[in-house]
Length: 224
Image 1: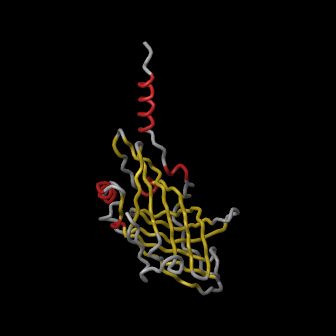
Image 2 (image 1 turned 30 degrees about the vertical axis):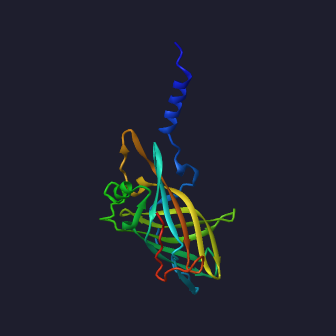
Image 3 (image 1 turned 135 degrees about the horizontal axis):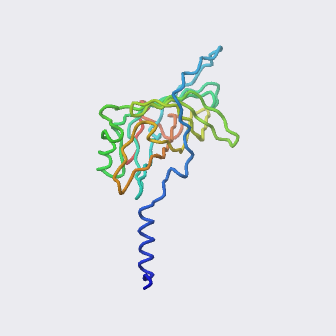
């Protein structure tokens, strides 16, 4: 006896529901290596203009499992941008993230992500990124490289970014993926709903001169 059409459709829909696409698949992968040493200072020091990150800055992420995905980010972080020579290549970025300010789009998930299964914020209350170089690409974008200290693990990462440097300040927008396993975040999830290794990262970093005025302390807030 042939299976009724509605049963075939139901089976296909069920398969689709349990095989949701990974949002990180559409973003470039960050190149991850062992941490880089700080660059050697130039023989002739170029005076830098230093700006704090504004409250318009955002640091977010999208994590996925087999059945779906969740958005999150950090409400509190601070950082500075130093611009030398008025160019993106002469700029550097430093960011310190308060991981205890993590938020997710579900209250229970927020608590779980803060636990030892994931970010372990009790033992790792901060994460840092310090750029070691910015280089221009042929398509008008830039590649930013720096040391990311996350979950007690430091790696050098390189990722593409749209960067604007003007007299008013600096803005960098980037979307890329990292593999959480590189930072020893290894919780697998449930056997019937495994968590994907790739995490989509979304950055929108702006100095106080770009966009609305910040609070003067470089602290940025992301709405949950």
